[in-house]
Image (tube, rainbow, N blue to C red; front, top):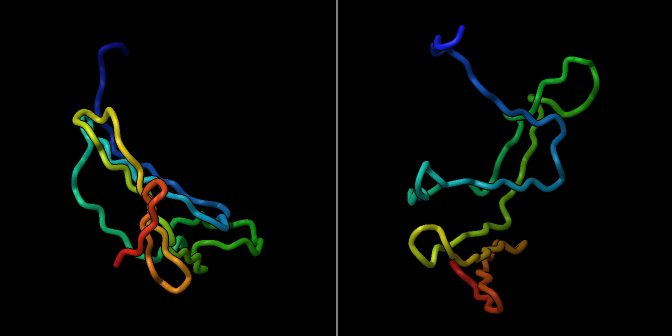
Length: 113
């Protein structure tokens, strides 16, 4: 049926079968031709239960009804240094167990509020 194309309804989903001890998420902010400059807001905690696959096989593996909580303890930020996504610099913000945040910028480490 060459030349015949039509849109059909559908959806795509991702689910996690077993929650990892440490969860790393990467947020891609690239559009078709450039980086999105919109601010991204996120919580300091994430309950992954909604994204867990359901287990219909009767085992005791954590499923969608159980809490799977993660606490944010680091954020990596890429700062563009030139126009056109050619060069940039990475910073890391790290939260200590006493809830103080620190900015790590190459060899410089400083407390931030």
